[in-house]
Length: 279
Image 1 (spheres, rainbow, N blue to C red):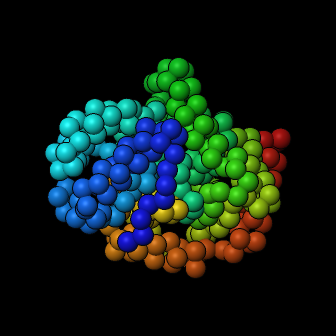
Image 2 (spheres, rainbow, N blue to C red; image 1 turned 90 degrees about the vertical axis):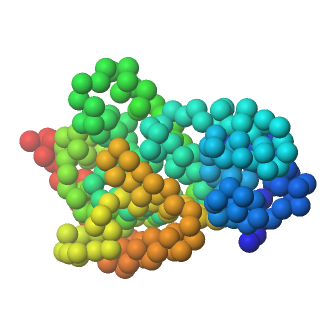
Image 3 (cartoon, rainbow, N blue to C red; image 1 turned 60 degrees about the horizontal axis):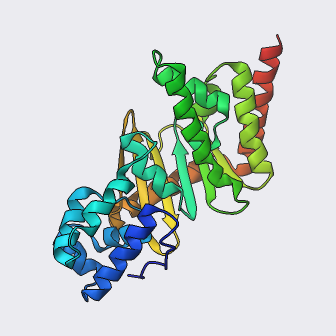
């Protein structure tokens, strides 16, 4: 297994823990696989901890302190890593997404969070939480828009999204909101910032009918897969499992419209929504 890249310990608490874990492991003369065996996890998981792509949980921190002789360093410091602005089921995936070199996503129902406009995201959060206060909605909205800032970089991460046609056809937030939301997506496509394909209804049964899927690749760390459902999510790091999800995504891309055809469909839908809003 390739070793993790060198990290800047000052960049984040997770980067600090990752750098310290790598140092302590190498000082103890252990490989990632050997340390993983002591924690009952894979060597890939240890590599992801060291690269800062996985959050260190308290159960692992305590064992690491015991195995590596670091007193209570990891137990004390993993508390800072545990704090997150995101829901528990999504927090670790969002943090990994922020350091990914490539993200491939299948969205069955909604425009992916990284591509949502303010008003589209507001409509989604209000639908999820119809009785929430405006302060709660604003807090969720702020976290989502901040998360999308990873696309401010002109080239990284590579983002490739396959949208089910239902994403385009469901008027989330109303026609004006949808027109703006779809135009935002097409603008990013025409700026060559993202790649988008639409999986049409005519494709029939497909490989990801069970729900949303996100694949993340990293520089110097193994890939991850995130499978999401209503208020739940599971981050997978087992290489055969991730490879199976990668095959699923490849099958989706093969069944979807080409990027050019997809752009034409999305732009046409945006125009239809804009026209409806003017009637």
